[in-house]
Image (cartoon, rainbow, N blue to C red; front, top):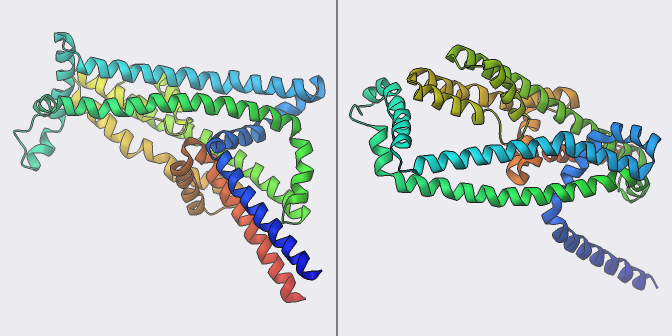
Length: 351
């Protein structure tokens, strides 16, 4: 009888592991959508609670999802479409054979060459001309730019699909999340108190990352605004606000503003100002988030800044933009499990 029980337990364990593996493979394509849905559910929970008290569970969840689309999804879609069209137009302009386009593009290249002339002389490259180099490598450059644009178009299609799945999942998480909490606590290998603490820490981490993204975007935008003002960019306040908005979008950010502005300054006959603005952007503005964000998030979650730094970068490399949220969440879960193991070990030692 004891042998039969062991066989049953072993068979159940093997079957459970097989189902977990198969289930993980099935859900693997939807991991970014599920993570986004979980993050949005945590951030919009206060809004949903207000809507639920007035409209009920289903209508409250529907209104919350609609508000998320209007205030988050729609602006991001508009900005992403606009940026893609701008890049496509720039690519077509570079490849154009019209005299006006060639002259405008040549002004930019000549301006960059002039601004870099002291450095080129120090390197012994006095005869180097960026215009001649681009002319001799035009076909290679065109191919090098077309391929990323094609990949970006495919990525945009996947992004739309991911957004639709995330919003559908968000609706059910908001509506049914309360009913799923108790079974999750029962199935957790941790004690109920430890599981509830884990849920609270995950929520705290998501909110801390969100606050960190917003604060760092403001700091980056203001730092970029100083560069715009010093370089003499027209309407620096407007471009500062645009930079703040773009810096809040993972994997986009300030280069989409200061690089075109720098090129514009070069075409206007101010090559030194344009090159220095782009150099300042790459050296200072674009590195602010790598320095500040781990400290801001770590201060709110009691996590070490270096651990937050690696979790942020590792999450982005693994999952893309949603990795900014997923990385710290995984770190939080790992630390909670480590605390549970340490507590269990202390109890076993004391016994």
